[in-house]
Image (cartoon, helix red, strand yellow):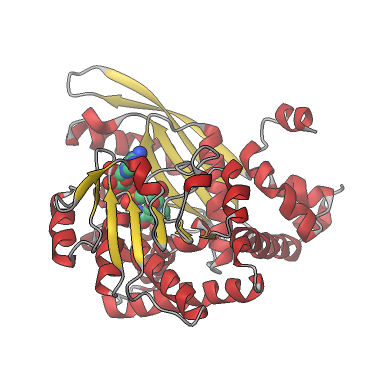
Length: 421
Ligand code: NAD
C-alpha cells in the first residue's frame, strides 16, 4: 500500500496518513479516497529576483490548490528556506479542512517560495513579491484561488502583490488577495482576527464545561502576531498568562504578566522582560491549565508529549503537534483544540475582507468581530456537541465533518458520479 502511495507523485503522503482513519469512519469508497488524498492542482515556478547587487537569483515557488468543491482556493503564501512541495500540499489540505469546518465557501490552497528573506532589503522583498505574482498570475483569481499572508509575509507583501496583479491585469481587483493594508481594501480587525478567534474558542470551551477563563493559567509559545495578541486578550478576559516565549527566550511569572507589560513588549516585538528566564522546552511542560503553541509546527512530539502537564492545548500554530504524539496526549486525557478550528479566525476574517471587496462595503471593526464570534463559536459549539463526552477526539471529529462536507459538494457537482472506480 505504502509503495503504491509513494509511487503516485500526486498524492500527499502526510494527508493520506491523516486521512486513513477518517476514510474508515466516513466509509469512503476507493474513488473518494483517491480524490481526497491528492491536490486538484499543483504548480511549481522558477522565481527570478534581481538582488541589490545586480545579480539575478532564481528561487523555487509553489502554489497548490487542494480542493475547489466548496469554492475557490484560499490560503497563505510563505517565504521560508524549508518551503517544499510536500509541505505546501499538506498545508493546503489543512486549509481545505479548515474552510469546510467553519463553512466558508472556499477550498484549500497554499503557496510559497523557498527562500530565506531575513537578509533581504525591503527593495529585494518587493522584487521577490512582484516576480512571484508574475508567475502566479495565470493560476490565481478572485473566483479561482485567493492568496493571503503567512510565515514571513505580511500586509506589506500583500500590497506589492495586489499592485502587481493590477498592473498585469489592467484593472483593480482588490479581492485577489486578503490580508491587505486597509488603504488597499484590507478589513478592519484582520490583524488580531486569528488571536480573537482562538480566544472566542477557548472561552466557548470553558463555557461548555460550565466554567470560565477567570484565573486559568496559560503558557504561550510564540510571541508574534498570533501569540502576542492572544496574550493581551486572554489577560484582558481574566486569564493569567504565566509564560511566554519567542525563538530566542522564554519567561515565567507565577502570578501572570500584567496586560500593560505584555502590550508594551508586543509593541517592541520582544518577550516581556518581567519574571524569570526559563527554556522553551520547560515552557511546553509547565503545570498550567492551557498550553498554547503559537509558533511553528511539530513542537510537541513523541519525545516531550509524556511530560506535558496542561489539561488543554489550544493549537494556534498550524500543525504544532506531531502525529506520533497524539496517542500519548489522549492517554493523558489532554484536550487538544485543533488548529483547524482554533486558528480559523484569520481565514474567517479573510473571507469577510473578500466579501467587502466584492460588495464595495466597508465593515466596522465591531461588525467584523461580532460576525467572527458568531461564525467561529457556532462551528466550535457544534463540534463539541458532536464529540459527545469524550473531548479528546476533537481533531478526528473536525476532520470527519470537513471531509463529509467536501465529499457532499463533490457529489453534488457530479464529479464523483462521473468517475469510474
Ligand atoms: P509570527 O512570525 O508573527 O510569530 C511567530 C513567533 O514564534 C515569533 O515570536 C517567533 O520568535 C516565535 N518562534 C519561532 N520559532 C520558535 C521556537 N522554536 N520556539 C518558540 N518560539 C518560536 O507568526 P504568526 O503570524 O504569529 O503565526 C504563528 C503561527 O500561527 C504559525 O504557525 C502560523 O502558520 C499560524 N497561523 C497564523 C495565522 C495568522 O493570521 N497570522 C493564521 C493561522 C495560523
